[in-house]
Image (cartoon, rainbow over all chains, first blue to last red; front, side, top):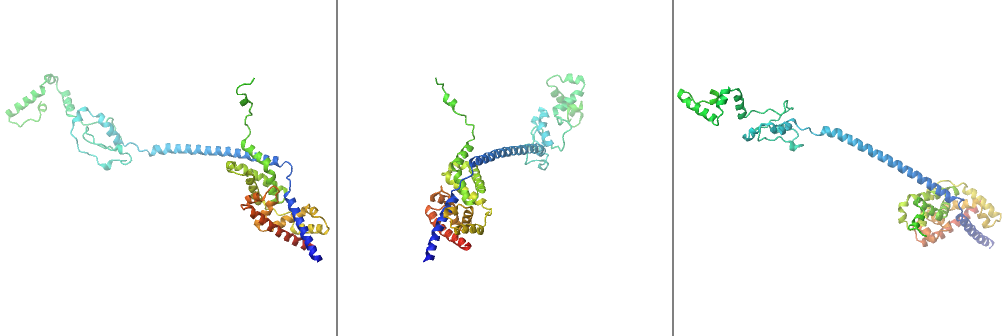
Length: 208
Length: 188
């Protein structure tokens, strides 16, 4: 009986002790100035964070600048070398028609002399494909830069005639002053040839 | 004679940092609660203050989430609890046997429950005994030790309904009393 009573007392005492201990453990007061210390830590952390953010932004900006500069240099260096030079043949082709005389404009359309195998950069620069010039009469693809610009072209018949006229004596030139000089000469030559028993002359001009 | 726009001119220019102001307001309002939760979990002032500072730093870091935080008090309580659990690595200054010996001596001397509970060794013994509880009971009892926290708030921190909190508290007290009896009986 006494043991049971002692057990009950102990149980009550333990309950009281437990309640009191739990209450004290929960009823703890922070040391004075807790709010100030917390705020000081928060401000310090915030200042450090903002400095870190500025440094990070600065580093990121510099890195971006370096990347841009290197990219620009790379593009300038390799872009200039990688860009296909216009082939010399293409230059000569594109500019040669301007050098030809207007007299050749009516020349018949010739056969193409150059072969497609001689065309560099055909896929990369399709607009630079060698073209068949209807004015020049032929396409010549040069493998090197022409030594003379504009490229020399063969003389037309009229130009050859002028060269002969330059070497002719003045009396002949005076005789050619009329409108039908050529016609008269041709008639004269044609008229003379059968009398001498010879074949028809090639040209009256050559006999003179 | 009033000047047009005088009201605007009289208003103080907002030079203060808004997030810091908000944190300051939260510190003034909830630092006590945060500290007590940390102390309940850690059992010493130094670690509890570290946990309190860390809790408010996390609050500042999550400032982008402030509009979505429905209950700041509950958010801070939950964060303080997690921070305290992370910091809870230091071994207790007083061993279980040492604390139990002191409390047993006080009981044998006929001291009252309040007087015995005031001793540091009694608190240390209690923390040792609470540490021996199953995790769900230990967490519920520790959070319930904080005066300001109701069963609903404890349940919100732990993610359990208030009824479960009360049930766990009852079980925890029964286990704790058995352990206390065993500790004191072994020493007496």
